[in-house]
Amino acid sequence: MNDIFTWAGPIALLAVLVVLILGLWNMMRGGSASRSQTLMRWRVGLQFLALVIIMTGLYFASR
Image (cartoon, rainbow, N blue to C red; front, side):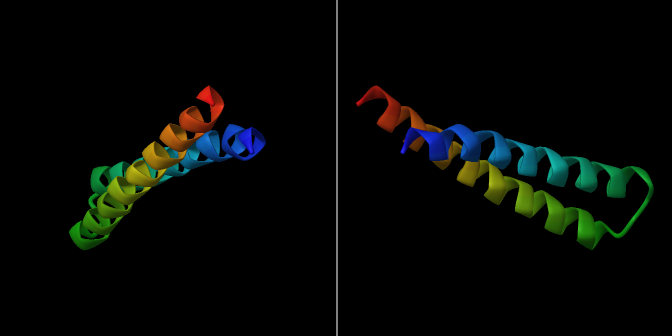
């Protein structure tokens, strides 16, 4: 079970980083404000998912 969280945590963090970079890049180049807002909302959701995965992994690792 720990093997799942060993890989899922870094993948979730990488997904957050990718969406963050895409959102910032879109804002820097003067892209659509709506697209930037959508990407930042996705980032918040992915951060929540990453936090849940990491905390669940820590819970199972401590058992």
